[in-house]
Length: 244
Length: 215
Image 1 (cartoon, chains in turn cyan, green):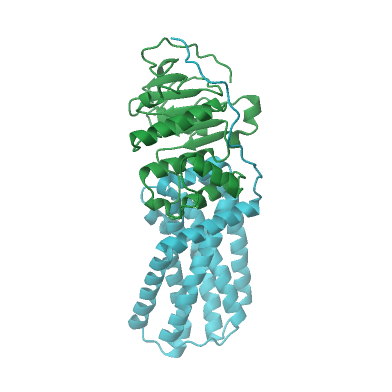
Image 2 (cartoon, helix red, strand yellow):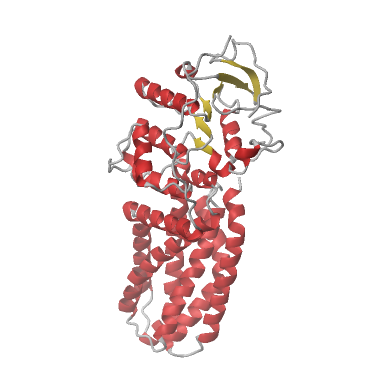
C-alpha cells in the first residue's frame, strides 16, 4: 500500500511569540491562580474557618480560666487551633492540582518547580493569616484577653509561626500527594516536624500575653527555623515534584 | 516497570515531523505509557527518548501533551486556563490566545467556568492547552473519547492541519477510522510491544514499514 497523497506542508497558521517568563512572573502567576481558585471555590477557607470557630467555642466551654490562667494557656490553644485548621488549606492546595491532572501540565511545561512551591506557600500563608485574623478576636472575647507584653513581638511571632507551618505543610502536602491516605499522611508528617516551632511560638505568645519571660531569643530561633526549612524545602522540592 | 509489570518491552521506534501516527491496541497494551514517556512524565526503567539535535535543545518547548484527563482547572474559564498554561511557556499575547481558541472552535469571550463545559468543549480546550506553545511534537491520548461524530471529525481535521504544518502528531485512539483521511502511519501495540506498523490506518492489515526513519 502506498502512502496517501498529501498536500504540501503548509506554513503554520498559529505561530505564537514566545517570551520566557522570569522566576518572579511564574511565581506570581501561580500565586494569583491559587488565590483565584480559592476565591471561586472557597473550599479551604470555609472549612478552615468553621473548624477554627468550633475549636475556639469548644475550648471556651471546656475551660473556665481566670484572666491570669487564660493568659498562661491561650498561646497554646491558639496555635493548636491554627495548626489543625491549616491542615485543611494545605491539603486543598494540592488536591486541586490533582483534579484533572493539572499538575502534570505544569511538570511538562518545565516551568520552575520552586516558583510553583513558593507561589503555593505564599498563597497558603495568606489563607492561614486570614484565618488568624478571624479567630484571634474570638479568643480575645471568649477568654477576656489583654496583652501585657510587646505587640510587635506578637505580630512577629504570628508571621514567623505561620510561615513555619505553611512552608513545611506545603512541602509535605506535595510529598504525600501520591500516597493512598493523602489526607492522613500530611498531619503525620507535619506535626512531628513542627514541634520545635510550635514550642517557640507558644513560648513567645505566652510571654507576650503574660508580660513575663523573654521573647527575643525564641523569636530569633523561630526565624532560624524558618530559614533552614525554607532552604531545605526549596532544595528538595524539584525531586518531590517529579517523583513517581 | 510498574511494580513487577512491564508496560512496555523492547519497544524501539522513530517518528518524524510532518507525519501523523495513529497508535492503537487493547487496554493495557502500553499506549498511554508510551506517550507519557515521550512527554517526559514517566521515566523508563531502561532505555531513553531522544529528539534530533535541533529539537533536543528545546525539548521543553517541543512537546505538547493531551491526556485522558483535561489537565485544566475547573474553576477557571477557558481563557484564564489558557493564559495560565500559555504563561508558563512564555505565550501571553491575548490576540494569540484568542486566535488559538477560535481555531479549536471555542469562543474566547465565553465567560463560563470549565467545570460547566460540555465534554466536547473540554476536549477542545485541552487540545488548545496542549498546543499553546506551538510544539513540534503533539501527543494525544484518546482525543475522540466522549465526542459526538461531528466534533470528532472536526478534531481529526485539525490534527491533519497540524501534521500538514510539519508537526509530528501521535494519536492514541480506539477509533482509528476517524483518522483514516489524515494518518500517515499506524502502530498496533500489544503487550507492550509494537505488534504491527504500517502505512495508512490499518497496521494489522498493511505491510510493515521499515522502522528506520530519520527524525
